Image (cartoon, rainbow, N blue to C red; front, side):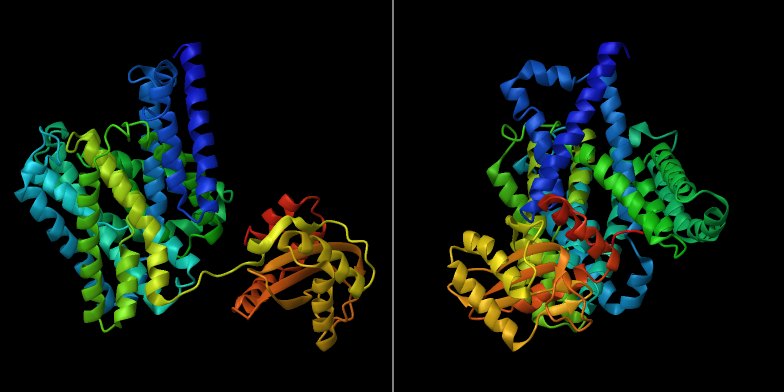
Length: 564
């Protein structure tokens, strides 16, 4: 690379990471998966937008050939291998065995039923022009059926956590079935990959490649898993933490990726299996898992998902009929299959539908498979765009659909109702009534209610029972008619305010809460969230040290106690 090419390399990579992370965070603020924003970043920087508005700039930043194109291709391949390492580490094989019959029934039904629903039209209805004209019909049909059948384990796990169902019996069945689904689906897809690139295999015929693939899978999940489990304690005892374990995990992942690429199966399959083997060891610390996950998910994965938008023009390649066909096939395959599997396992209708909608989330996995099929000329641009849109829609719909069929409510957090205007960094009040009146002013400004009315309602409630919690906390609150949604104000006091707490200590953190009348259940949720957030003494101390509303919000939304 010359100096100009080096400059383009850093510039393009910086733009991809920066745009992807920024739009990923925007998507999360609207309750959507981060990958939606990351793909949108690629669409903006790719041929769809930048390539149309400023084609010369697009060609200069992301050339189709040459050293920069080779670098970006190599980097995105490493990125997706590490992302699959993290996805594999999410697989807990013990959950599959513990859930037993329900896992097998839901997992098998959720794999075989959509596989059959997708394979039949893809193979028997070639006139739809779903595949690339040069692709073998059987290979395309196997690919399409597999991509429709696989679920998105990382996204399903995140959805269940957000809904508070992760540790429930139903949540464990969904996770176990998704694990079974993913393992079986990826093994099938490994075979399909071998068929896709049969002519590029390292001197092996396709039968021997399939045999090597199955042997490698069994070896990694048995002997390899055992050796890794035995090695981790030694590494943690004799190498620097967490560098030793991190290097060990990364090295094994890349070596496994190299092996599966060599035998004719894509590198990501080796990385995924190695992630399963490493993540299944109880010796792997949770903090190490988190570091590996964040390293891959916040640096490498955004580059990969943004690079998807660089592949095709999403406007020119958008076909509404094809998108609808793919979406209908995906949904009609997964939902009934998982529903009847759950019913056979003895679950109620409502729980069975909840499991079906949970398993219907496709997310990143289908996008990865689609990109590989595009690279190997199995599908065209229109089918790739349809698969990406299907994955996004099913992922976005999964959580809300589960909430609806299970009659769940999204957990409410006090920070959801806090604004910069209702954050008072340095309160001047020295008494509880004065503090309540001081916080009533910003609350009146954001709710449109009368300041005196708010203060009187909270003071009346304070007379019934003091709201000092102890440990320097107080939560004065009241229910008020005419309020459309809860409102929260936070005041920080250096000198402290006496709220008659059980430990007789003054309150330094005062959270004033207004709840709509009639009562909608939010009061209990918000108070419980406050208790969870500030249960750690270091978090309370850190809150008193913040200088701005943004710092306070970052602290309370981190979901982790402040380290010593």
